[in-house]
Length: 342
Ligand SMILES: *Cc1c(COP(=O)(O)O)cnc(C)c1O
Image 1 (tube, rainbow, N blue to C red):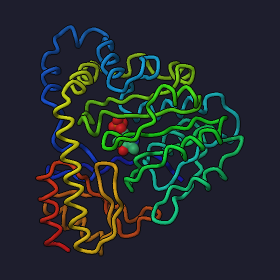
Image 2: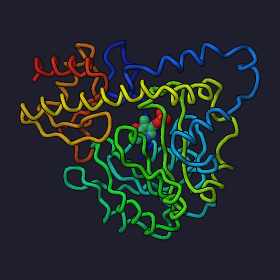
Image 3: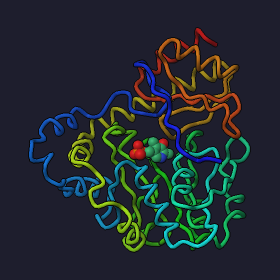
């Protein structure tokens, strides 16, 4: 079986509600920062100090508690390489399915075996099945909270129990969507107390920097030490280095977008309740729902220039589509189209 990542097909211009991107775009302050770059900024290796300072203040930890990465995907890849670099036959990583595709792709690329643990009934988090799958060959376990595609959170106690249950492995907790909830494991005391815990964050979603590529991985200084030998010294380019502090400083844009996401989710729930369609309460910026004839719905939406994600082929996601909940006007356009199509 191949775990190679297949990027979503290129789409004509339209309403992109299939990749959980920020359709409002980044903060205008980011564009200003990019425009202010001069000839020498392009010619010299980038200075990361402003991005590191801003990130430390934003997440309330010292700079030795994180590494900036070229998108969170880069951090995921470096964790996979670090987990498997000591070598040995048949080392394993555990992926809960359905999951973000990069976990299996990176574990496979780094030479690890991928052990898939399917989610439970209604995509419930399979904590007990993960505990049963852990053995002395396990080197990395990938979790996502809020989860993708359900949007549900994994309770903190459950995550920390898994961390303690696999001291020989890294426990990678992907918080790509944590901007849309209050729960986070990003706390120096928690990271210190769990030496195998790594938390991933990205500026791609709430901050709208998906194309700039900017993310970070967090852990105790001792946990990150082997990772600092894996991450390339200039993995972020100068655009990301100036975009990060500008994006973090514009808290008004960030708060506005998060409020749009909340309102969009309410509108989606209202619609789905009225139609008596099954859905998952989401702590992220998307909603997963079961609809009749999902393939026809996805196709007819695409005919109108509105793209949503067909997840109906994923384990436990029969008849499901995943819709980004972002800008309220976009959501109203989606609901108007769904009203006609369903
Ligand atoms: C979008 C996403 C990422 C990737 O983030 P980048 O910073 O764009 O690499 C990682 N994990 C999950 C769960 C995501 O949805």
